[in-house]
Length: 548
Image (cartoon, rainbow, N blue to C red; front, side, top):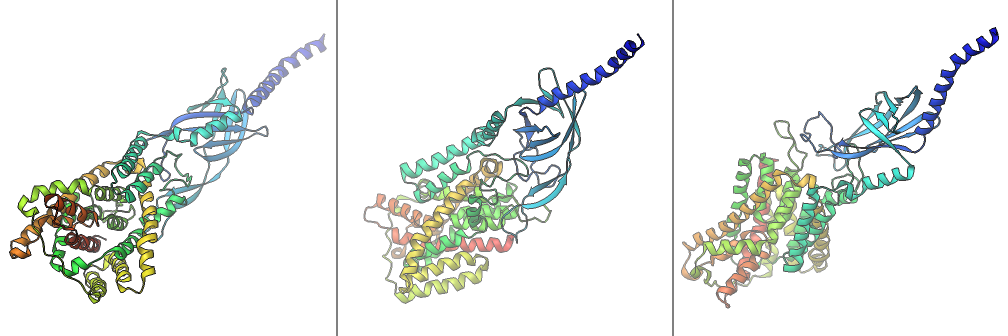
């Protein structure tokens, strides 16, 4: 009897322990079967975002991301959260799962603000240990704890979740849809109406490429987007950011341009200079709207209707890297400024005619000008050399642009470097135009491009283009007050003082022929048109000297 009593007491004490062990084994089996997945909001899709640090976006939007636990039979686990992996060991106590994390190295990504270091993020590496946490398995088979709930899925289903997370469908936003619609408009205008197809087709397609939604999260670089260092698009975009493409474009322009009309009638250079008023008035307008002076200077150059110059200046002044006197960093406005400049260049046939008609009378539009005189080869050869020296001494900061412009022209006019001139004027400028267009288009990534600043830039750009056109026409009318009747200038050619070569000159030619089919103004209009190219580059150099 005594032995039976002892055996009963032993069973009473052992049974709970055995039951607990059995429960632990059951929980362990459940934990290690498949993966535990949570899909919740709260992740910031900005690779360089660091809460609490300066120059971070206030109240950034958050997105949903998957967080996955994988438990192994040996008591280890892996947490995959926002593509960062944290390992550790778990222990089952009663109905709870205690997690202790190992220290893991984490690479933090920050924007590179060093102007002497090109490309790449500024990185720092820390050892991070997440705090211990306790999870519990409820009666419905859901793992609860750390403020979230995890459901169990097979490895195959978890893999599908991962695939979905990287797809465009999981990351699309209304901004992407809006920007892609704008890209379609660019392609439509270029193909249907022949509006600057050499520019709008690469830019329009680039807008589509740049707004394909992709996975983004803090401290993670997928190396796909134009703003992600190491990606193909980012490498090509360095030609924009570092200002390599604009001088090469100017080299090609110089090799294609005939300055004979300007050499034969130098006073028409004043019309090109007058049209640059749009640059400086837009600069003042941008300051009034709250832009910092360097940002305003980059925006103002849109008034010159010169895309390469706008890119060159914005890459120096509004590149998101320069630090202002108050310690803040200038905005990165390269994308909006470039898109605005090229958009208004393409819309020259739409914007300029109403301004010209408004500012001129029927009688003025009928003025016939003397044919330009013949220009000798010596004058053509000397012009780029003399022009380089004069303009470079005025604005040395513009040397990359005006130097390449006059060099390309010398290749053309010397007569002994035809192969070099043809290369600069055809394959070289074509390749650079393709790379420039598609990367500028891709830079319109919705989360970067769709800001109040972009809307202001487009409004200022439209105003600056109108002012520049009006300034050139007004200068021609003023010049006529001091010229003899036989030397009068048709005021319409003043509109071609903007540097949209040769589109502005073509607009003037078309309007002149509508008024009088015998009045050919193209050669006359080319003089202020090419001087506008020089003028906008010099204006950019002056702004750079004051604001850099």
